[in-house]
Structure formats: C-alpha cells, structure tokens
Image 1 (cartoon, protein in one colour):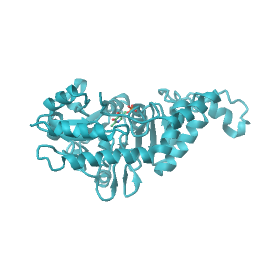
Image 2 (cartoon, rainbow, N blue to C red):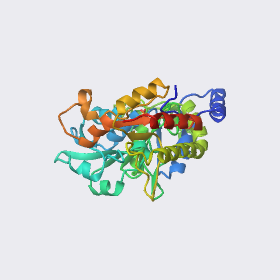
Image 3 (cartoon, rainbow, N blue to C red):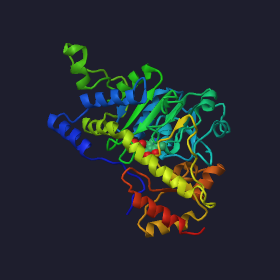
Image 4 (tube, rainbow, N blue to C red):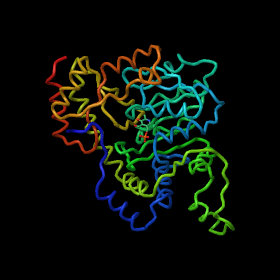
Length: 369
Ligand SMILES: Cc1ncc(COP(=O)(O)O)c(C=O)c1O
C-alpha cells in the first residue's frame, strides 16, 4: 500500500539516537536544549519550547493567553480535533468558522463572520503549509494562536509561520515534515510566555531536576527542592525525540525539496484537468511546506475506493468539526461542507518514489467523474 503521509528517517537519525542511548541520558536534557536552540535559530524564533506533542502544544498555547474563563475562541472547522480540544480543555468555547475553498485556510472574512461580544481570541491553521493571509487576521485585533503544525518550513516575507501570532505551535508527529517520532513545540512573541510555558511543562513545578542541578552553575544550595505553582499536564519531551529532531533539522532542506518536487509534479499533471480542483499555489512572498496534496473532485468517494483497490491510500483531512461528534451543530459553513464532500488527500511524502507518484497520477486520470 502506498501511504498517504510519511516522514523519512535513516542513518543520520540512527546515529543521533545511538549517541543518545549510549549517553544513558534518555529524558529531557542537553539534546532537548540543543534542539530548542537550533529549531529557534532555523526559524528565526525569539523563543521555542519543545513539548511531547503538537496537541499538547496547542493546549499550552491556549493556556498561555490567560483568557477569562469561558472565552469564545474562533477557529476553522476544517482542522484537526486537537485544535478544538485545546480550547475546551483550557475552559473556553470553540466557535467554528468557515475556510476558503481554494486554500482551505480561514480568512479574516470567515473569522469576522463569527465575532461576538464574547470573542476573546482567534486560532488559525496553515493548512498543508499554505500560509494564512496573516495581516488582515492580525488586524481584527484579537490575540492569535497560530497552528503551524503543517507549516514548519512556511514563511510570509521570509518570516516563519508560527511567529506572527501571540503564540504559535508546531507538530513533530511521525508523519510531519520534521519528525521527532512524536513531539511538538510552542513559540510566543512575548518571552515571558515562553518562561511561563517552561515552568508549566513539567507538571507546573517550575523546573526539572536537570534544570535545577544545572542552574546557578550547580551552586544552588538545595537543587532538589521545587515550588508547585500551577496545575498542569506533564509535557516534557525526551532526549531521544530531540536526537531524532536534530538529525531531521539537518535534513530538512532536502526533505522539503523532495516534497516540493512531488507537489509540483502533481500540480503539473492535474492543473488542466477540468474536473480536478488543485490546491492554491503559494503567493510570491510566501513559502509553502507541502505537507499534503489536497484536491477536490466530483466523484470523491468512488475515486477513494478505486485508489484503495489499487493499493493507494488516501484520506480526507479534515472531517469538519461542526459535522462531527460532540462538536456537531446546525451551523452552516458551506465551503467546509463542500470540502467534506469533494476533498481527498493523495500520497505526498519524502519516501514516495517518482514511479509511485506517476502511478497515483495515472490511476486518478484514468477515472471519469
Ligand atoms: C493542524 C494540526 N494541528 C495540531 C495537530 C496535533 O499535532 P500532534 O499530532 O503532534 O499532537 C495536528 C496533527 O496532525 C494537526 O494536523
């Protein structure tokens, strides 16, 4: 079966993980710190905190805004469930907005349509790594949570996606552009929020034994003591994950080049086919991350089943939240509903071969809507 998503790991990751295992230090330690520094340098972030998942990073990001309990936070319905869960877990109310059909991103207009007197913040998601048009969103005047889970290599005017909002998050899950085998990260414009996040991430006890023993040049009189200042989930990452991340950072440019080549190949193959709606190209001042390739076709269900029969796995990301389970409502968000009927993510990842990509293209083009 050709997978729809995937990462690429190999000798470099093995070497880093082996060195980590040989050091006998598996938990949060120097490799985590090095990964945090190098990730922040690569993206040009003022501060960056490595945590154990993108979902937890979202929850921490919402908490860091310290909004009044029960605040409404507007977010796209066409996103992963963790976005809405983070809002609810932090004691707030998710309010879903529609997205743009071509970019699959929320826009200032779709967000503005949902503003009420209770609106206290906005969450945006750079779908597939296509940057959200951030200026008009920021102009709405609300604190912004920026979900850059798909957008680790995305920029607007050379500034990293994730760094425009008050808080931003990344995901390093097993199929993301940069994987740590599971992990995520938080950035914030205000360095005080990063300090606060660092304090929260170890069950709200301020500092880990590692941090304490290494602070003040190891001269802290009782490094084993800690203050329990907050109730918070443990989100500490491991140095094994950081070791994978360090190797991935070195390989990110070549991994991205492969994704870009495949994305362009699909664009070229499908652009002039009248029954396929291809994804929006990045603007002239934007860089895309090519996390996934998402098309819209009239015969989506038939196509998905046919591809599966031929050994090609596909998905629909995402099942709109306002149509799903506990988030279901009567709200009409027509673009997301159209994506739900016609959208399909086809295989795109750095291990996909040219032959596999051509097989995907030929199989799709051989169908008739
Ligand atoms: C848009 C978006 N945000 C957040 C997440 C959560 O990241 P993680 O899987 O690292 O928890 C995902 C996961 O796929 C995602 O797609």
